[in-house]
Image (tube, rainbow, N blue to C red):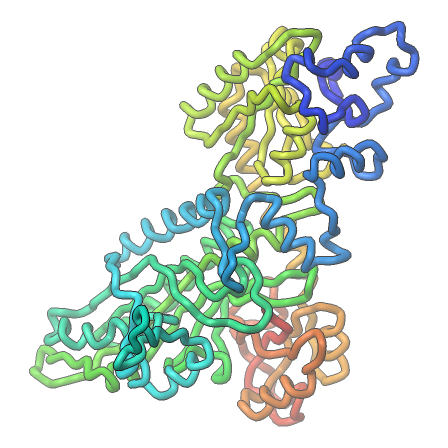
Length: 561
């Protein structure tokens, strides 16, 4: 550390289980450390500065055990338990007494609000309006589109009773809202002047998943936005599908710093009843599994036919509309946690972090810098940053460091008496490991607002770059079955030539089924600079990796959530 190191608190100087006061007055065990005549306490320079606890330090481990701030599981050793533990300790969710349902705590809901604010603003620029439709769907409406209802039938929850009375007809809780909205579309759309019709709703849906509920990733109830639009022509619908998909890419990459691949789903994996489905696919390197990040569907005219959504064009001809639907869910939050989280806790990208900067006083020899912390907090808040000062006097600075690192706050500002003398603050980045160059730096008070903005922007970019590098290293090209299986079992995504036949895809699922789960097509990627392909073209004579038949396209395969 720099000159102000004497004010910093080392792991071995802490007994955070005692909840030491901010002034140190209630911490008799800390007093001897101020007396230089105590030789056993003298060599402070040999002790690591507290940044949430130093890995490998015996007392650091004791501190974590006593405060229960440390994560008991390692991300690369026991990912499932690490994730489940982190979302609770990081105050993202609380478990509920209905299996597969979770309480979103303010920390995670704030992230969802940031996503919502960005996306809502962008779709309103496109002329899309928000609305709200009921939660319930009649059985008649839900079953009207055969392929659609078959696709969702296992997940539909039904209301069959009211009190002690049996309902005359069961009512479904929406798994999605096509069948809720489209009977109304047929009333609202009469002529070409009623088109395009473009609406979106922010709501919850219920899909009664029974296989391995996972917070944010797979739950029985979740929050999302769902857009539903109708156009006079397919060309208009196609344009919107890709506009929305690009917004989904921006949510993941520009807000959450998570790289994704844009592509189109196979016939097996597309939306039930739709014409085609486009997707942004994320990947979790730690588990070797893909995650469907968000989807934008062209429904074609299938639903228009079922629900009789017709319009009269300029020539007075009666025609069916072309429709799209598209959705983004709170799954986004889970993907972000899985990609960026580490063994200390959450690592939140600055653009969505509920708190971007936490300000912590570091008292020394009875001098309390809390007033200066308040000034810094106000200064940064006025500059537009999301800032919180932690002036609690029943926790030590080191405990606070660990607490806010666990919650993933991007920047920590430490202010001690010597910092005040030098008119500076110590700034520590959450995204870098201890002792990494650039993790901490002293910044003059006069330059603070500008420098904080620069550091946050640097962090946002660094998180995406790091994640992209790891993501791209997990893409392997395989042109035969043996290479495919080797890559798959090494937790990779596999880009392979494919004959594009449903039977072959189902065969691959069957042949790869096991404890780790079956492989499937994640998508057929659109043109991507990072992929060894150009515009989804394939050389003449290339054979399908699984069937040996002539290959028609490149497909990205993998196991998934």
